[in-house]
Length: 512
Image (tube, rainbow, N blue to C red; front, side, top):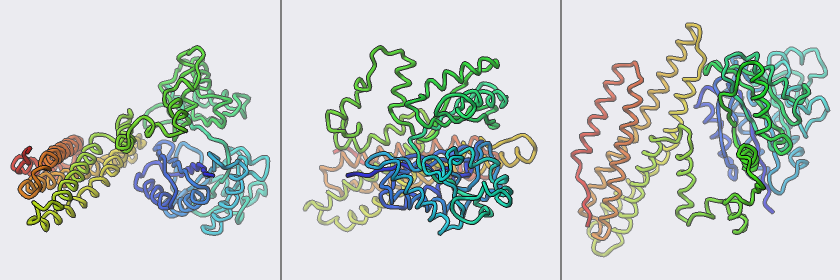
C-alpha cells in the first residue's frame, strides 16, 4: 500500500532567494521526495517549504534541510515579524495516505533524535508528538523567541529541550519537531498600518484567548507594504473553515474603522477548503463536492488526477507548466515562457536532425547532423534550466522590494539590493537571448542537410527560436529601464542590439 506524508519545514530566512534555493536543493536531492511548493516572506523573514513522499525519504530530506539551514542562517543576526527559536524553526509531519498520526509521531521522535546526533541542535516536540501537555501548543515552546529561550535555558528547568543539552545552538538555536493534521496558513491583510488593530483582532479570534477553536493567530506589521496583518494558522479547517475566520476578522476590523485589504494562503491548501469557501460565499443551494467536474471525473476514472483525466498523454505532460503560467502570479512569466519556447525549439530541432540522419537520402550528412543533434541537446537542457532561473531572478527582485526602509541605512541597503537583483533579472533573459539567437542561426544552417519531409518542422523550430529570442530581449529591456548603473545599461544595450542584428541577418528555414 502507498504510504505518503507531508512535511512543511519553516526556516528563518525570507530575504535571500539564493539561501532558500539552497535549502530546496538540499531537500530535493533525496530520491522519492517532491518539493511541492516554497514561499518566502521578507517582512516575516521566513520561508515555508512543502515536501511530500514516502515517510523515510521525507524524514531524510527534512534532516538535510536542518543541516543546510545551520550552515546558512545565523539567528544572532536575524530579525523579522514572525516569532522564531531556530534557523529551522519548526518541522511538522502530516499523514496523507496509508499513514496514521501515530506513525508521524514516531517519525517525529526519530527525526528529533537524529537532529541532535547529526547537528547538536536541541529539539522540542510539539502538537501530537509533545511529551508534555504544556508543549502541545507551539506558541508555548516559542515563548521569548531565540533570545529569551537562550537565557531561560540557563536557569529554568521547565524550558529544557526534549532532546539534547540544556543550551541553544549558538547560531541555529533549537528546532521544534512535531506531528499534526493538515494546517492552513492563512493571513488577512488590513487596510491600515496600525498593528495594534491587528493584534486586537488576533486576540479576539484565537482559541487560547477564548476565540475560535482550531485557530492560532497574531498581529504583525508588514513594513514593506505599510499594512497590518492578522496572521492565522487553522489547525482543523473542516471544524473552523477559512471563510468563517475571514468573516469574523472583517467584522472585528469594522469595530476599529478598518477592513480587509485582501487575504493570502501561505503554502498549499486542500481543495476541500476552497470548495467550502465557494459554497459559503456563493450561497450555493444543495452544493456537493460531487458537482465539481474534476472530482466527478477523477471518481469515474478510478481516482486519476485531473491533468491526466481531462487531457491526452501529451496535453497531460504540458498542463502543469501551462497552468503555472496562467496562474495570476508574477512568476513564471514572460521570461520563463521565452526560455520554455527556446527549449521547445531546440527539442523540435533534435527531432528533425535525429530523424533526418536515419534516412538513406541524408547518408552524406550523418556527421554534421550528429554534431547538430548534440548541440541542440545541450541548448535544450540549458534553456530548460533557465525556466526556473528566470522565475527565481524575478522573485529576488520582489524580495528586495519588500525589504524594510525608513532610516538612511535601511533605505540604502534596500536600494542596493534592488539594483543587484534587477541586474540578475536582466542577466538571465540576456543569456536566454544569446542561446536562442545562436539556436535560430543553427536551425537556419540545417536547411540544406535535413530531409525534405522535415523542413516544415525545421521552419516551426526556427519560428519558435526567433520568438523566444525576441521575448527574452524584451525582458532584458524592461529590467534595464529600472537600473541606475549607466555603464552597465549601455554595455547591455549594445549586446541586445548586436543580438537583434544577428536575428535580422540569419538565414531562415523555408517551408517545403
